[in-house]
Length: 137
Image (cartoon, one colour):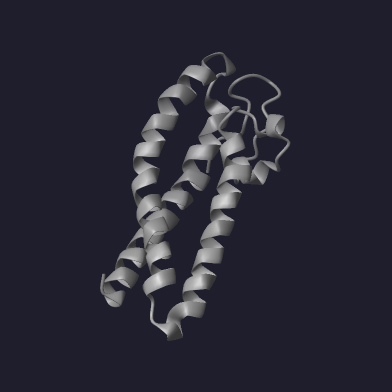
């Protein structure tokens, strides 16, 4: 693939992921607090396949473009390609070790993660029942 096209496809996939992540952090994760504990397992079983269908395509494109850039970018862009690959690795590790554990419980406290990781900006403690969290902003 021609380097300019590759960079444009990579940028498009990256910005698609930025928008998607922003939505998930601001809307999706805070709403976990409103899912009743009794139905959380069923909700999560329905949520994960749907979320995967939306997240996987741009993630895969971004990943493949990153690999291609490592091997096909002009020499003068190699430091930038490697920096981008390192940043993507950091984001993926964050996803695996911080965000994914939040999917196993409607309350972040059970994951021992800071509430800001799972449900910004509303927090995630639900001590008084399934809808005790403050309303999402």
